[in-house]
Amino acid sequence: GGGLIAGIASYVKRLRPDIKIIGVEPAGANAMYQSLRDGTKVVLDKVDTFADGVAVKTTGIETLRLCRELVDEIVLTDTDDICVAIKDIFEDTRSITEPSGALAVAGAKKWLAEGGHKNKRVIAITSGANMNFDKLRLVADRAGSGEKEDAMLTSTMTEKPGEFRNFINILSGAGLTRGGPAGGRAITEFKYRHNAELTAKTGRAKVFYSVETASRSDTELMVQQLNDAGLATSDLTKNDLAVRHVRYMSGGGATKEHERFFKINFPERAGALRMFLDTISDKWDISLFHYRFTGELIGGVFLGIAPMQQAQVAEFKNLITDDLGWDCEDMTEDEACDML
Image 1 (tube, rainbow, N blue to C red):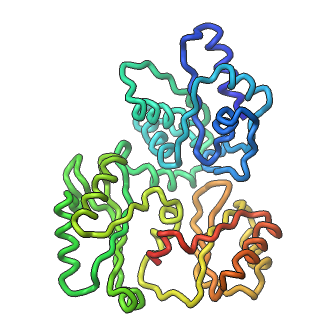
Image 2: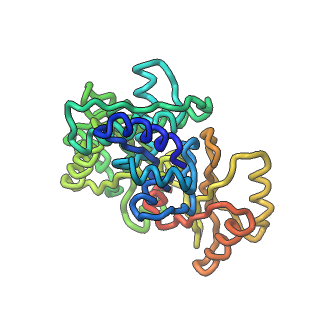
Image 3: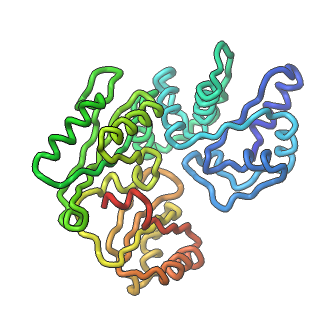
């Protein structure tokens, strides 16, 4: 709720009023940022719990007053930023911080990079090392290669003989190789499977692949280069549904008629799955189900229901939110679902 930054700011500003105090919050748990921006105490509807040490819905009354007077700026970061910061700290010190402990490093890097600041002395408060070992797998997946980015892409090509060779040639023209040179663009993952239904409808195929790039800006440049070369390409790197679920499921499975997809967040505790299945009963036919344990307090399930008409969506969502108190979001139109 702002206790750490309020205390530090009160002490530092009294001794050195010229020192800037910059707070850092996850973009999905930014109660202080919104409260300072709006000039009033804000209560969030939901909170991203990846950095559970700072996952609060609102600020304290006194801490908000102090931050309004003493804090110069708030920087927002995402999960990937935090994971890279955890890796940076480990490589420098051989110490492993929890996500909220690495939050300040992630924010400092972003503030320096986006503001073009040079020759600045910046101190990041790394407070917290209560790391769940199971969460390290997710951190390693999302951290990529430090300053580099593990870009997740999907491209569409015509489904005909020889087109795959043309696809590879376009990738090569954009500097993509398998196990590429240091500092270059290297393909780290590639998935393709013939999808008879998609081909019959559109005459096209989709491929899913990951590329190690130099940075976020390099990824954006590469996607533009691929599209300019005639390869319709989308960047799913920041698509949470693709990163957490679809990348493990993409393939050529046939979709069912009137199928809809949902993302459901639930508390990680024993009996949660049984409770969920008892609640939805046999009225709803599950056509897809994906869950992967990440060590977080809140788990995520990617769910398919078929058949389901548009008019039934609200009824299903209300069943999850009202009866169970869990978050439920209709993801049917999300770009990542095109990869299923």
